[in-house]
Image 1: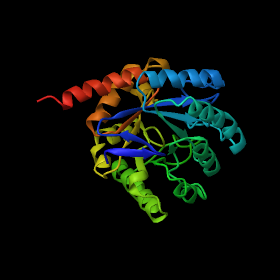
Image 2: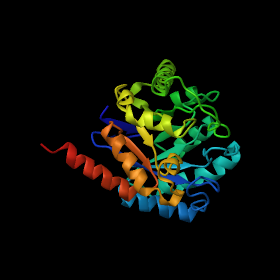
Image 3: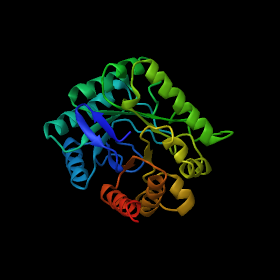
Image 4: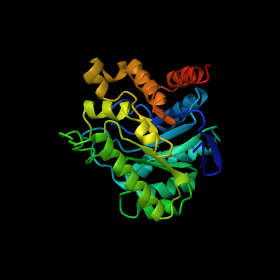
Length: 278
């Protein structure tokens, strides 16, 4: 699939794109609280678009390991004003809403969001039916367990085949609900109920997911697995994040979800130069 229709905005996926992360939460693992004020969130979104982001992914509930649940009213209060404000500015980027709550999905799309990014792969009650009626793309992510407990001894017999099977089953469920394949993206869910070894295996075998014929979104930016491998604090994981992004690009990733847009765009430009070389 070489393009994505995001509520009338066509995104060309023949070359990988960057999705800038905009957490409007007080407790996200990397930048919690930094963009919880409207003006700060708008300024960061505009900065990421100026650096080359094709998507701005706005999330109002932290999904870091051990994160507490956020109710619908509070998540809506955090997210919706930012979406409304950014859509009024006509940014040259698609606004994505990072949520698992069907009511917020609907309100976000009505406010102008062009993509839904769901870490629960539309498994919440009514989510799949709500999205079927919204006519925007949705990214389906794999997660073992729930954020509060997902990193408590995650286990797989074969992580690649099990994650691939889960995503394939979710794609089938979406198609049966009336969501066409042209509206679907998949995400293996790095760090969501996986050990470092599981994450490395998924990254090594990323072509198994791109072979499904759907755009693959990869979120590796500043993940805790880099603390285990590199012994780096969150704010010192840029080089590890870019190295991981490069491996993902070579594995066929269509979208790199990142905190550091400028550097991620450099990685894509270098990858493009290599891909186009004789």
